[in-house]
Every structure is written in structure tokens, then in C-alpha cells.
Length: 171
Image (cartoon, rainbow, N blue to C red; front, side, top):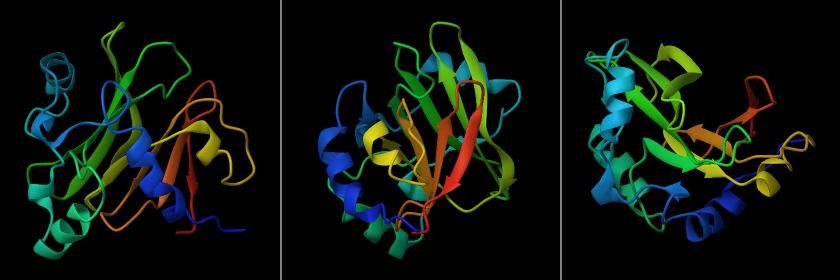
């Protein structure tokens, strides 16, 4: 049974759009220095996904959402730890590949959520456990990382206690 996340998309922005949780404000569409240093070795010439990477129509669509902020960075409790972690999407220099990574500040480590694959301009969404649990009937205990094109959520990446698993939303 497909679950439509468009119905929760707007409330997600309204509830999780400021501070250390949810979307990162558009004026902050820059990775923190410590995250840049951690990702520099493997992804030296890659750049953070921003609305400048979108076509004109994608930019208009993205701007329609409340708090249309940086599409390539979110914060949340994605792995069950008390501390907030940072999920972010990077594009390869030739815009042929994209990767989604998770940075944990206390350990200064990077974890791959989605390995480098073809580029499709991913927008990241922080999905609370109560909303992501409705997908597939699995109880998710922590925030999930949602990803998809600017027009809506397509995949939920959730922590199962050991690694990230993907679940399509049917949207």
C-alpha cells in the first residue's frame, strides 16, 4: 500500500524548520567547517546541493514550500543517539554523481547513507519517527532522512540500529 508523504510535507517544515532540528535556513546553505574537513578527502571537488543547482522550474517549485531552505542539508537524530547529526547531499564536479552522507559531530565521522550514484538533484527532508513509521508499517524509532526531487519525497532512509535502509514512499 503506497503512502503519500505530501500530506505530511508541509507540517514537517512548520514543526522542524529552525534550530538544530529539521531544515537549515537558506542563509546557512554552507556546510559547517568541521563537516567540510571530514568530507574533503573523498569528495574534495564535490559541492553541496543548493537551489542554484535546480532548473528555473524546479527553483519555482522549491520556493513554494514554507521555509524553502537549503535543500542539501538537514539535521536530526538519525541514528538514535542523543546528539543531532547532519545529513547532506553532494554533487560531483561534472554533475554526474551524487552522494548522501551523515556527519556525527562527537565522533567527527562520516557515514554513507546513499553511495555515489547517478545525479538526480536530491532534496533532503527530515522525517519524524511518527510520520516515517506509517510507511511500510515498520516502527521507526528515530528521525529518518527523506530524499527526492524538488517536487516531493520519494525515498525514506532510516536507521535500523546498524545501518541505513531505504524505503520508497510511492509518491
